[in-house]
Image 1: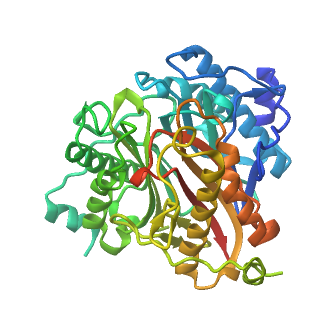
Image 2: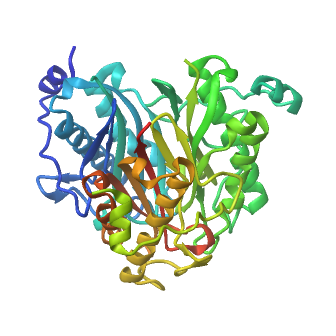
Image 3: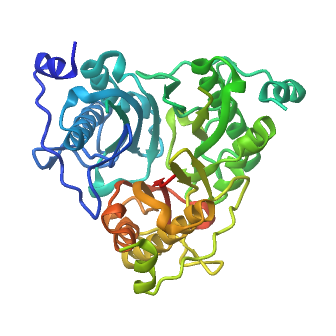
Length: 153
Length: 153
Length: 153
């Protein structure tokens, strides 16, 4: 089953690529790899939530944010390779979670990204991952996700 | 001298792979590279220490944690390539140190990872590295380490 | 126009490679890629500023720091490939900004790195990028920058 048919089945339309907030591009292809910029949980031009997870943002909201980040990352990849079905493997995901220093549930938050990647790409969506709790993210976003993806030539 | 013989000489048995705390895998191979998930200082299923370095965890404990993370990362790589002697080069290491904002000794902490990699792999263990001080890590771990490794075909 | 001629035109002499503060090397080449260590804003052996952005360091100082980090990163790459004109593409940049938790302007800070890379490398300097706000950096640096670069064989 292809990623594009899974997206259709899930009723997910990939978002528009989020314009970078600074001097860079959403994704770069080099050889068989695409590296994405760090993606924020922007949906239709609005941040899904702002603030730190564990204080003003709860775990469930943050998980939704991570899912939105992942979809934006997939959209960023597609913006350079043209077709979601050219994605061969999600190789690596890093999830940065803006965290109150007492909140240690980053893995559950970043699962919002990992789970949707598994749903869309099946085995090809299973990746290595790091989740870390940072002090603050651009625009006070609760989550930022970046990926490395292997693509078909 | 091979990595496996150095491990034997050092009396180090690679740990069991730590099961991911979420929806991902400990390591992914893509072409000649293996990317690990972020590894926590779990030893026999127990975290070596919890808390922030510079307040509840001291530098020496944190260095031990970094060493444990590195061994878990090597174990994660071996779980996908089967043989530690197929590791050609430790290319990149990132060490995240959960830090009190006044603690700026992250390099000395992450040396716990770098030094053991040098002992095991010799010149092939000398890597590029980033060390950063973050707000908090999963399960309140003091250190998390991820690696990119080049492997023989 | 080559990177070396742009550097000359900009009046920029690449700095000496900053010696690692620990057991690693400034950059590692693997295949067509060079991975740099995290670079601090050291200029002539002195940190440009210390402290957290948004409290003791302001945005403009931090942007200058990010620029210095980027130049140190380019110098680190050149230390392994010998010639700046062998750089084919700046693929990925990660900028860690030591941030007061109320400061969310990391993108503007890390533009100090992105902009100088664009000036030196033109289209080849346009990269994917993540900017995150961390609790503290080695030696209390305000900014740390790492890069992945594609190089000519």
